[in-house]
Image 1 (cartoon, helix red, strand yellow):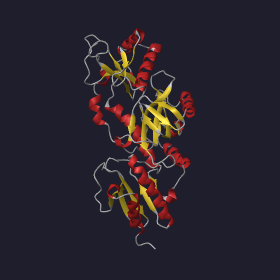
Image 2: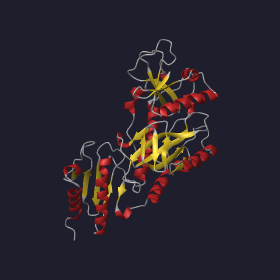
Image 3: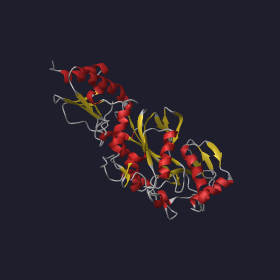
Length: 397
């Protein structure tokens, strides 16, 4: 058995002891320290974005990747589609725990508003992985993963971060205070507010603080202990969350859930689940991460694509200028159900409403309204600025 890069370059060959360890892992024959050793080995391979190549077929080498059942926290090996079959009798032939994964990909629901006061169910309990064979990434598991993105979008909308007006302007401290306030309405499990186990800074100090609270908590009972980390981060790539305060970043073991389905450069508002990855472990780590691009580190207004940032900054400046002239304009971005349109809605206190899109290509059907404009149809920022200013200032003293 070998560890390889995704371009098939050899990293190293496993030692006989490591190979025997993985064979026991896939056969479900490990427990205690041996099981922990196997998990640690597989986590390192997964975190590095590498694969395993099996020597049972030397000429073709079947390739496996390390998957994580996000609900149960169980690691398992899955054969890469389209690669060679294992030799008869090979212990790594197949893993039944993920046979339905490809069918369930399409069942992932869109991000939705989460009603307050109902348990979030962001991550499943370890008991679900019982009975040796474990459960696959069923549609229920995927729904739980996706609820993390729904929660982040709900927090953004309920706290008003998707609305900008000069008279509503808040500094970064106040914006995070609004997010924490909304989190009090959302219990992780019954009668345990998410805000009780939420840290709004992603660094080693705050991770250790959260770990200490979780380790000493009695409120989780038989449920899996988990908390949340929320912060404005620089980038998320290769299973690492990168921040301005850490050059090395922080590994995560699960999935990265993106708003709009496309990777966008930072800054990003990121929400991560913090929990042990395996039953009985005292090692806490980031599991799943959800992210939404934001305008800047100081202004957590949601952004669909990087190309929006410059015209958005112009609109913020323009709204402040119009406020100084006595014209109050509110800019709102719907974040729940955002599949419909990449639109911003600007409205004034004089009942004038303008819907605009700042992306070059449509992300959905355009609104059926005469007061819709696309930034890409203008010659540049200055022309667009003059049009928007004229739309709201026309006829004013």
